[in-house]
Length: 156
Image (cartoon, rainbow, N blue to C red; front, side):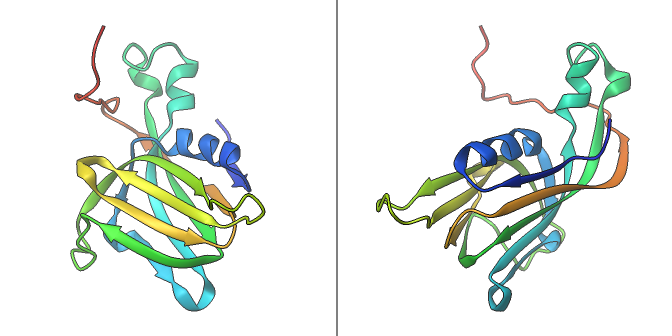
């Protein structure tokens, strides 16, 4: 499967990026907020759901399970606030569940908050002037041993 390069300029675009990043593993050392550049960037090892599901259900197609190294960049970031994350523990890893955008209450203003939600109640909230996000695969891909699971989900 070819490397992905996605750009989000609105909440719908960001939902697509979020879907591709669901269950990505991110090390604290691989995230940084650069206030002078108004940028937040992270490297993630994302589970390639599209590849896994192309060959049938992910559970049945173990040979197609893989992770990819991906870069994630947010521009026009005014602040970054962390919840439940020890930014000094550079070896800590986080499992990314979703990336969402909440627009400002003023319908004329493009600003708002981007929230990166991680398992265990951890989160990062980025106050942004407007939504400008890029996710890009960086070429490296390797076989994954397991399909990510969500034990808290109700089963039917």
